[in-house]
Image (cartoon, rainbow, N blue to C red):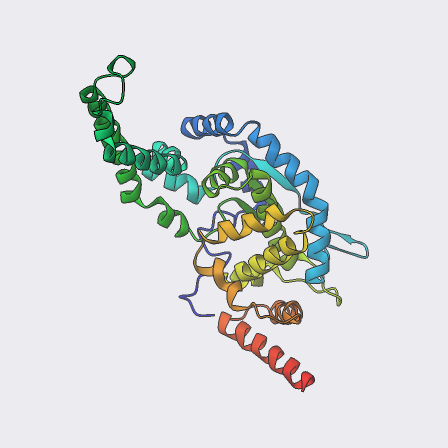
Length: 342
């Protein structure tokens, strides 16, 4: 593989640590800043950690069942029983925590209030345009403050709101979040065979995207479990993706597969829980790079799932291939289907 290509388990990936390292990390106390932000989120979204926990427990088995169907892979085979425990964790994953330390907690809080700020600015602008009405003799002077006082208050508030909006736009937090390009709501720690769902990250993004934390929990759990199934799942021949090869695979392959199956599972669950698909699509608008890879695989044909699965199995069996080889093999499968159809 080309050295310039980013791999899923590249050095520095926060989820590429051993089980012992993960347990030590989980045992470390939260920073004062993260505790404060967590309290603010819980005040903003009542019982947020419990809501994330309940949503995962409610949909866990349904997600796993659907992933088994769509991927054709199983975590258990004959006498071999594999488990992938999922834990709801405090705090942010490292990349998101580092970004908040750099930009400051206040910017993250105000970012969630930006829609309200924009609406307030528009209202104040409308009032300013109609301020001549405040000077009208139609309004009884005894029932309102003097127009001059009203105008001073409006101007001061407009300036304050404008300064906050300008600061938010200057930092362009959306772009910084999009550029993280690593799982930042949950993570599959592939060397530890464990998944963490970060309730604070889920709460922050659900509020930002105007979706429920429950729906975003389902999306996050599906994505991380898709990583686990594509990595550890046994195919019909009892083969798995060797961990070293999985870690060394192109990020576009690994994340593309996880995103593809997340979308597919959310679509399959749509009749029972349409909010999950809505949350997936909303979060997709904030993602970039390898998290958009799967969009290039989607074709308006019922055989799409068959093609992706066949290409995935070949990729796993070959061990480690560049992304261009992955797409070449996918194209070959499409050509074979065309030949059969003729």
